[in-house]
Image (tube, rainbow over all chains, first blue to last red; front, side, top):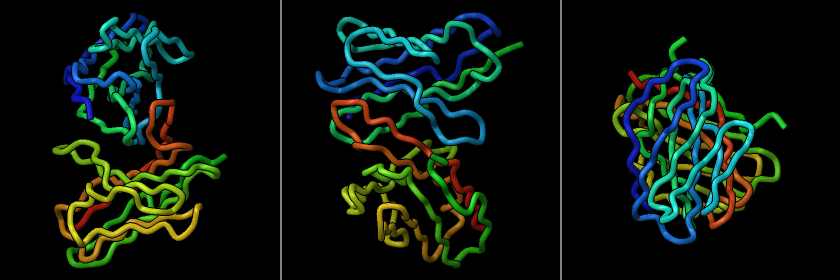
Length: 108
Length: 117
């Protein structure tokens, strides 16, 4: 499994963009990069995934480096409801493996 | 669909007692996963099933832990005997394909918070 490195915590002001980084330097060529988040007292939930190209959905955008060794989850306007732990997890032929993630705090 | 259903939501038991956690996956999903989450170790995969068959149980911590999936709509995780260090939140998740070079989104249940006194 690819090893990931994420900052332990980040802080953002409400209504501002947030860029959550992830390093996955040992990712294999066929691994997709998945992002999940875990709201307080809930199970993790899917946010977005991608392979090589940048991806957008209603929740977030995913920017993937050209060499695929890193990616950035972008929340365009953070809200208080986005306060959660965000996990980056490359996934190939094995189930998702979750690291410690980044705890995002959003300040009103 | 109601999503992944887990029961009970909270369980408090005494050391040495048997504990059974239950999970109903999303209908039509082929894969079922059991995870354990603690502050110290984060979210750990314990075991996963494909079409009711256990595929990888290398994450099961000890022989005290066992998991079964008698049919496509039900799975149990049993701890016997339970110990205080088993206190954690246990999550069940299901997915259509369960890992692979495509988009196998996992859907998690709300978890069971287990406290062993």
